[in-house]
Length: 249
Image (cartoon, rainbow, N blue to C red):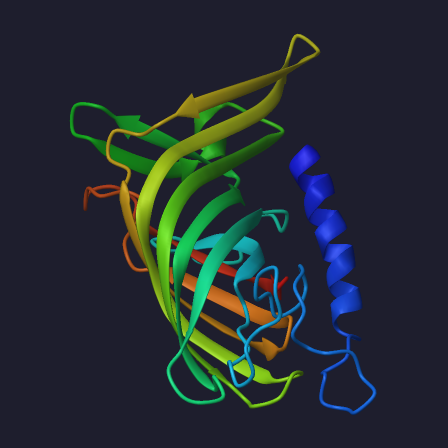
């Protein structure tokens, strides 16, 4: 809850950033000033001629789903997640219209679904089966993932403050934990059951992604190149994400 409150506060600040000056007019405030929501240069103004840098703290608010042995967009819509990306913006040309981005990213995804993941420790397989066939009727089921990754991007942008931008990139990282959460009722009482870990879930994860937008805002899409479960006899499910990216500075 504390993390959500902090994020909403930063989100509110981001609306103000869209109306700030570009520093090009004679009477406008200098664009070279420190602070969140601007071209942060440290405690002192940037040196003249130094290119502006962008997109160094990015939040991706995502809808999460899977594709493979199951069709996408069949799960409940409240499958939400958040990617937090702390990035370096490295100009490749004068004016920083082409740049290289790299850094560290934390991802948490939540996939709501109406089926059941059944694992066999002996064969190290995990199968997704219809929950109706189990005789169990939970109120809510979800698969939750938590990971850290190194993102790498090539960034293209127009030479202006309110610029169009395209980011093409990918991530390679480590899946810290994969949890299945079940919420139901037993004897009239709410019961929450969490299952941590699967015998064959992929620890190494790698994905490709794209952002397309205007200045602080962009549409975001991502596709995991490897399946959630390693064993080829398991149900093959690749994580996909769609959402909105917000760059705070």
